[in-house]
Length: 629
Image 1 (cartoon, one colour):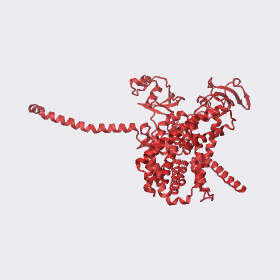
Image 2 (cartoon, one colour):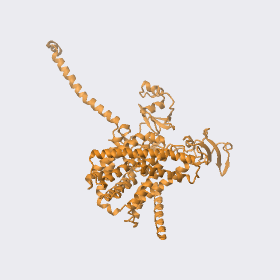
Image 3 (cartoon, helix red, strand yellow):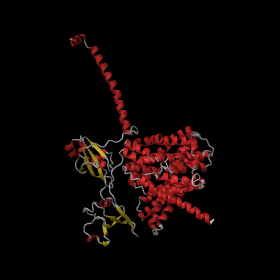
Image 4 (spheres, one colour):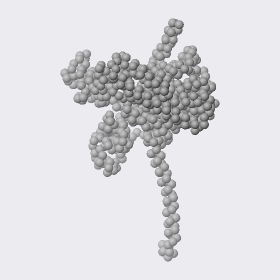
């Protein structure tokens, strides 16, 4: 027995270490990290090194706990401004998008696989949600500097669509296991009422749990080493409590993380570091277990229809669902195309595909193997092409800041203040003599191994390490002061225009200088207000507005979204790949209006000709003769 404990521990830790080392490959070559984890699990399983693991209940239990940890960390790291910016599109994709994808994919699965309609929709529900871990890794760790609106939409969608997919999957498994054959209207009504109850209870428990976590952390004077474990345990209690009363535990834990992360919770820096590590560990464990549970020797029997379904999901079902959900939001077609492509399937889809095995369904293993192959196809094709497609669609923008060396230090006994340690970078504003704002209090400077008061140092130099005492939620201004200049690629050298424009200047000056054709009302605005109005009331970094012969580019915005820097360019924007599909509501309306106008023009012309002929026929013959002569 003792020998078995050592052997299991040795094998398990060796797999985790191998997965951790594989992350270096992913960071170096841009490979999808989840794909590497799954491959390590597959190589170690029954058809590889021979590790026998076929316990579906343990796999589902461990995967569910790991997913709860990942979702809490996802909510904890989602700022409210990103949620506000992307709430409409992301929540539409997370609800209606999952339902539409399930319906379209289920119809295709019914004809390509020997499954009943309910089993086909069950498979569709299992693969309908995007994987938060894969999306977060590719967008954040992959150093793809996307436009904020696109990034926020993808991250919020991937963090909120799991509860809906989980509810659909479990409900369909229960119906099939009970050998029920409900009518369509009864099934739809049951799903709708069950969905409202499940999501409603989960949301209530999540809100109450998030508020309780914040309150307990602030009230209890726990040791800093115990505090992160305490918060993690509370988050799992929220997850379990919601599920115990019939609610969605996954939605509850995500909302709890969202509330806790956006409150003035104590020791936020320590919590973020701990949860980041726990999230990595949870991902590794979940992916390895799911890889071990699979049996690759069973894949060839369904390889062709499974790959065909994976391609159908990527090229038909997901794009149609995204287009229908995003029609009301007037997003540019390149952004809609990118969102439809970055619908990566991952560990959640494999985890949900285990539920048919737990329910004892006849075709449970077929559903699981098909879902596993679909995930592999998605990661291989979509995971490797995210960066190139973003560049092709013109969604990559230059980085705001260059390298920044910063450490956040938590102060014992202080709930609302932080001590930041910055290393002055060469070429940064402070190295060039820029003053530090008065709300920040520099306390200590380290130079050449000597520590001195800030007041005695004079001008800061590159390489100095400065300790600054600031209130928490400090503005981004400090990062801008201590960061070096961003390195811009040669092809992006003129990205922000050759001239700077003061956003506070009057737009009438632009009209007088360049005659872009502004209306009288627009000329009364400031240049910044004009650009914001042309962008629909919300401007973000790197947005562009074409005004006749000139183009205005947003160089920077503050924390409240107000434009603080503009560039002016006489060169047209670099051509962006044209997307022939994904028309928005505005474009559809414009095209319908143009069609009606073009359809009416021939009719009006014919009517005018008939009226002219009738008028000519009614004229006196003498006038006609005179006209002819």
